[in-house]
Image (cartoon, rainbow, N blue to C red; front, side, top):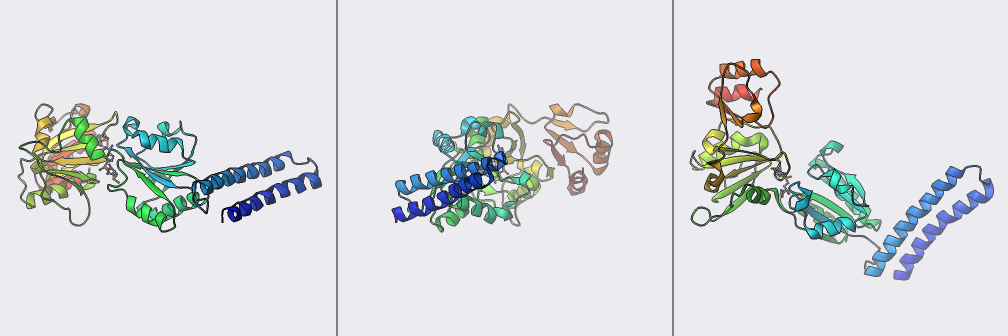
Length: 350
Ligand SMILES: C[S@@+](CC[C@H](N)C(=O)[O-])C[C@H]1O[C@@H](n2cnc3c(N)ncnc32)[C@H](O)[C@@H]1O
C-alpha cells in the first residue's frame, strides 16, 4: 500500500517535471516567466508530495494531514494555550475568523485563510467550510481551525469533528479559555462562591425561547440583541428584579467594558454593541457596588457620553429630545434604559 501510494505521487510529480523539460526543449527560453510558473507548480507538488510522504510514514496510508481545532481564547493573544501555540507553529494552513487577532497570526509561516463574517460567509456556510478543511487535510496539510474562546462551547466544534471523522481525517481539539471564564477572572467575579453560588450555566442568549436554567450564576452568550428578552424571561422564571447583572463587551481586549445593572433594569434595555456576555447572579454584586455603572439622568444639553455607562429615559418625549441633541452621535456601548414599553419602543429606533 505504502509503495503504491508513493509511486502514484511520484508519477504525478514527474508528469509536471516532464512537461517542464518538453517546454524548455521546444521553445528555448522565449518565455522565462512561463518556466518559472511551471517550476513553481513543480515545487508546490513537491511540497504536497513531501507532506503526503511524511504523513504516510507517520501511519496515515493515504497521506492525509490532520485538522486541529484550537481555542484561541477571548481575544488577548496571551491567553492562547502553549499547546495551541505549538499547533499554530506546525500548521500548513490556519483557518481563522473574526474573534482572532490578525496581527498575532502574522508570525506564523502557515497560509492564513479568513473564514469570518467579512468574507460574506455566515454559519449557513458551515458545510462549505467543513469541505475546505477536508480538502486541505486530504492534500496532506496539517490544518489548524482557530476558534474564539473554547472550540466546544457555542462553536460548531462537534459538527466539524463529525464531518472530518466521517471522511477518516484525524482530528485533535486543543481547549481554549472561553470568554465567560475570562470574564470571571478578569473582572474578579467568581462564578461560584461559598454560601452564594453553587452552580453556573452557560446559556444561548437568543432564539425563540430563551432558557433560564435553575443555576445560581448564568452566563448568556450571543445575547447582545436580546437583552430585554433575556431579562423578561428571567423575571418570568421567578428571578428577583434586584438580581445583579452585568453586560461585558470585548473581554480581555483593551476596549473591554463592563456595565453593572440589575435584571429589573434590563427589562426595558437596548444594547447594540457586540460581542457581549451577560452575567447574572448574586456573585456580580462583588464588583457592582464599588464600580456601579454611572447613570445619566437625561438633561436638556449635550454632555460627554464617554463618561456614561447607562442612560435612563423617562418617556418617549425624552427619547425624542435626546435624539434631537445627539442625532447619530450615540456611542454603541451605551446601555439605554426605558421606564416602560412605550419608551422602550422609542429608544429601539434610535
Ligand atoms: C459564537 S460564540 C463563541 C463562544 C466561544 N466559543 C467561547 O467559548 O467564548 C460568540 C459569543 O461569545 C461571546 N464572546 C466571545 N468573545 C468575547 C469577548 N472577547 N468579549 C465578550 N464576549 C465574547 C459573545 O457572547 C459572542 O456573541
